[in-house]
Image (cartoon, rainbow, N blue to C red; front, side, top):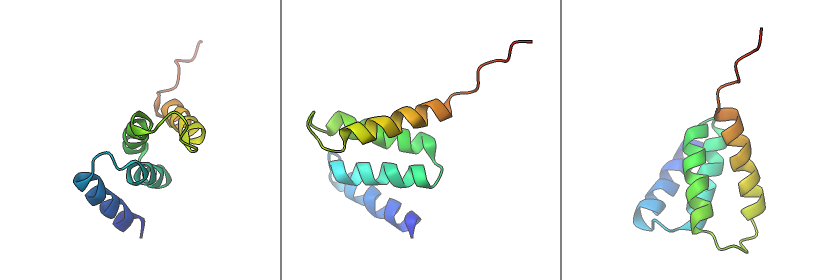
Length: 79
């Protein structure tokens, strides 16, 4: 139950705002659910909290870049 997981992670984050793994996992679930804007918010905060040598940093950065690209409106077509 992904929505239940989102609620549980949300409660964990409410109690411990700097809980890196909860924020990271909730962001990944938002992505799977197609909630790109919410995923971006959580994953951006994850990277702010994460140490430079955090092993999931490179993949999280790549996911965030992908989400940002897909969130942008397409460029106007030249006619």
